[in-house]
Length: 341
Image (cartoon, rainbow, N blue to C red; front, top):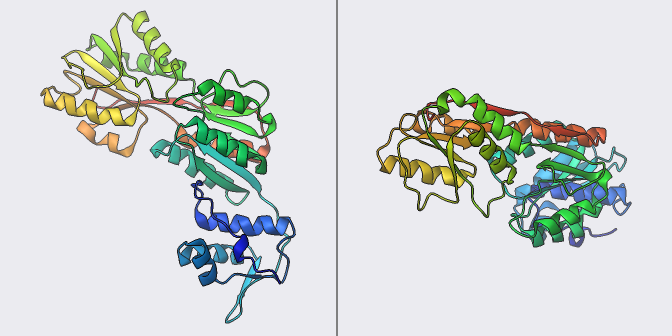
């Protein structure tokens, strides 16, 4: 009887919980007939020691396999494979540029909607083209669906060409619909230019007390330039003075300015600089922040936000996976007016 312990492995690059990776290993072994009915799995202690992973991780994986009716434990003898016939779930690869509150909301909604209908492996490439390229080339062929959030610090066009070369029937783009990726594929995305333009129009009554609108937009950030296009179009149409700044470091805040921050890190710098000047937020200086979070309901008696429905993004993406859809869905954008404006 084969000793499986040396066959097990943990992918340290994957964000997928290790116990799920172990479950997927067993399921894939059954599918390929390398693991057969009657086989004995490594003991919890043996596999924990071999993989250098906590004992409860292995125990949790085995318990889940027991719930699925595939494994049985016998005291003193170990864990046995009692069934290898099961409905093989879809294998899904998630490639996210980074992990944040909003990306977690997408993942949580996606995994909750799929339930047990798919095996998910979750990778973070940290906006790095080389990491993205390696993950895509080494791993994507093993998956029936590959969902990508396509933001890169450099080599964007090279990355887009890699994505465009993928089989389109397995591709779903999330958050950003890349113009240079052609063909019939799924997408759940934001329309950045239209969204910010519409949001600022909805906030017009509150914005009228400010003469200058300033957007903090990092040159090396991941947000698309479409945001700037929508912002500029709004300011020029409605005769606001406006500026685009890279950071708050050299910014001289004045009364009558209203700021829009795109990246989360910039909000902290912005609030700190306003408070140092003894300005009243929402009276002297306005603040609008991208993406709503529970904390923004509290900071400075409430921060005005403009935000995509990330939960819906995850749910719609999961529905597309289950239905094998190639639809391209724009998610709605919402405005929450609070005291910072």
